Image 1: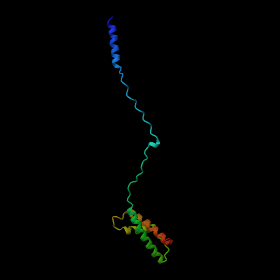
Image 2 (image 1 turned 30 degrees about the horizontal axis):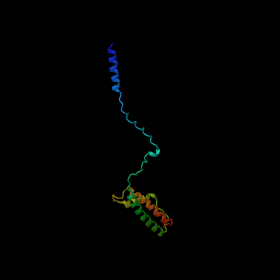
Image 3 (image 1 turned 180 degrees about the vertical axis):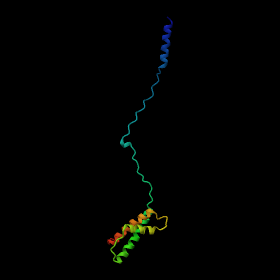
Image 4 (image 1 turned 90 degrees about the vertical axis):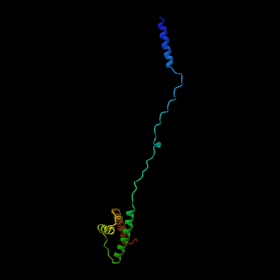
Length: 124
């Protein structure tokens, strides 16, 4: 019979040893859900574009178009230049210069057409 109280005593000590009186660790705060105001606005950074050849071609084409229009006005010629003729002028002006590629030629065509039409209409 003595074994039963000793057994109960052993279980009690084991149970008490498992109990710890120290304070529990503080609970972590739950993460707040992100609102729309907390989101970072993405930046729209365009890729770098080299526009200098176009602008150089536009300036050169403008001068050529203005000179051609003034010459046609002096001859009292009413015929305008077609887009195909301007493209040929741009190709001839570009020649074998490697800096005068497709962008330069597009700028030349646009500048030529713009200044040619302005002079022919009397806006310049």
